[in-house]
Length: 458
Ligand code: G6P
Image 1 (cartoon, rainbow, N blue to C red):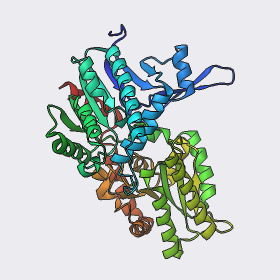
Image 2: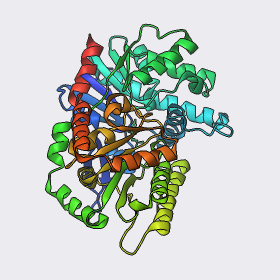
Image 3: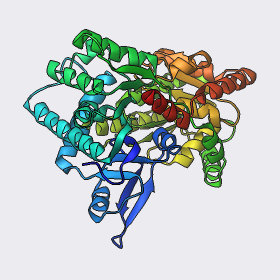
Image 4: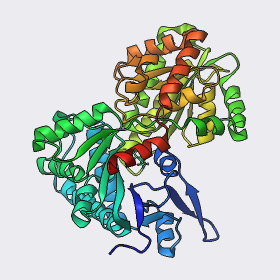
């Protein structure tokens, strides 16, 4: 049944715009999230955002009827959510699209996988049912990402009147790699997304890969339209936010930690296998080894914020990042120089401070849907920053010309690129940073979102 508060624009994603944590006195503290979708949607009036409760605090909020206007949080059975989110989305689908499997031993599609897949279906069904209730006749529904690939098809069956879009924030696997998935599951994923009127991606490359999968496996994309919307950085917000007092304070601290006169190579990532943090550290080690003139003169500021720590493979990777950073510090560090400054606690103000300070930004993912760090640094940079960028990041399509481009697997080439970036002359670096900032802000989040909405309604 359609709810009496039904809306004209709906968004569905696993992670919503708000999260709750219980306070000691039993009340609930709410925290607003950031990101492209949050700012994108801020321009829209009559809307509902359907998302999952992700923590005990979130579940408590749903039970108590605590909510924000325009947000519907789904209290999905925790074990179903864990199977769907950790067991399928962040293990299987994330690994397929980022090509992270070590294929001689992984993946294993057995009875346990089938059990989790059934949870993934149930989890998708909960979203489809909630959306069917929340949508006004003829509304536009924008379903987000690999967590919810089955929703468009399910929702189409429940509500044929709706305009349904699906947006992938990740890369899309090329067909030969996508075929690692069991045949029926791969087909289900493709059919699920093709239930949408329009399926959109961050770059042409990922859109073409999706079309390739549909063509090879299903014989075509049916009537579904395919679009590309390259989310950009929010220039106005970033320029304002990066000059607030808390960022200035963190800059002072960082400057002190780095030491006067030293250059900085900055990276900021969620600690996640596709980000290639370990190879980045190996490249930095190679730089210090092969070009000893940089010892004591540069600091690698690496912010690696924990992510998806329920999964052992992410925890192990986090431990490896720490181990390699410590090893570099033990090998090359001196009494007053710490070669790697590794911070693992998430602090947006400190990330902005590092962006302002950076001489070089290292963005070397194995594969990445877009990578907004590559787009944010040039906007915020105080004195121009050279960008070392993986050709496998979506951002490469827009920023490739003014970045120093690397093959993310090639540690020696990445070390050479770091050296080149550190020695770029000031005028060249400033000119490139200006052009990078222009390209990076070409499609700010609100425009990005409204373009999708217009295209879906067209
Ligand atoms: C990627 C995905 C998003 C996800 C984010 C953070 O950017 O495309 O859908 O929200 O990672 O991951 P998490 O698992 O913490 O939501």
